[in-house]
Length: 335
Ligand SMILES: O=P(O)(O)OC[C@H]1O[C@](O)(COP(=O)(O)O)[C@@H](O)[C@@H]1O
Ligand SMILES: [Mg+2]
Ligand SMILES: [Mg+2]
Image (cartoon, rainbow, N blue to C red; front, side):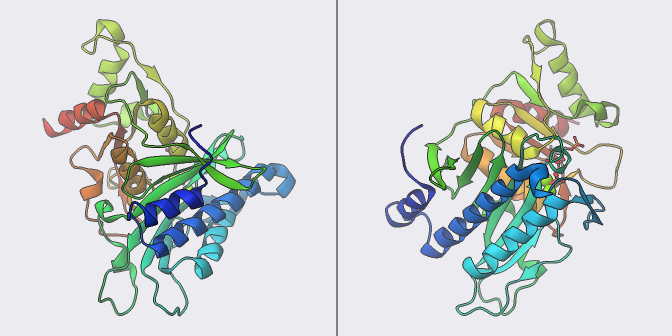
């Protein structure tokens, strides 16, 4: 642990001393953090809080919603509606954007979130999380609409996630490196526990859902085949594998000790670019990973440079230790 600096103090320093963020963005991030704290408490109640199981509904992507998907979505909306200098919000769990009712002064920011990432792990008590991204509301815009959200990830002004695991940890970037804050339950506050995180450029650990192997495209197959050959293969080293099936948990591990994470396009749904969502999952995680010295591509280009054409757009994701991401990307572009 590096200090007893709270998230609030860290953000004030980012605002006043580093001049990195305006006061309005600081307040918005504090509201998001408070909402995450509430979600964390709800997650911890588990069966005692009747929060496990399915809600019996489907989201816009046709996925079955869990009770916690809906609860987490409501907590974020409610907290930010009145507290966050926002013009509008967009969520993986809502078909359309949520325009914040008439505000004066007009909200300057747009908030996007995956309220509960790793839904399949809720009922089995494995790490899950909330992923968020903040964009600036375009200037000279008279009214907010979906088009305002369609900005490439490089234009994010803040991004992060909160992981609800053995510890609740909030990980954040405002473009000045990546900082981690651990929730101190006795104090009720997030405390800075790691700063200026760096992902090692090389790794011997990959994360991919191996059950999809037969559906992968040749470049992904080639990369994993070479890893699996270990010491005797072209890579000359043995690789380890991890797959939590919560993107937050897999990316968190990579930020802490390195590795490569892939959820590539595959033949199961050939018309979709991938499973993960560009705006709620890939963009915030790609920026965090880049801010920690890693890389993130869709196999063809940097994720942060993709111009979105739809709010709920999907994308192929390859991110983590720089040299490995560059290798997989070169296997795609060499074709
Ligand atoms: O079950 P699969 O196909 O391995 O997918 C796992 C992936 O799906 C996700 O759970 C999707 O997120 P949601 O739970 O928000 O839908 C990612 O977190 C994870 O990387
Ligand atoms: Mg998700
Ligand atoms: Mg989700």
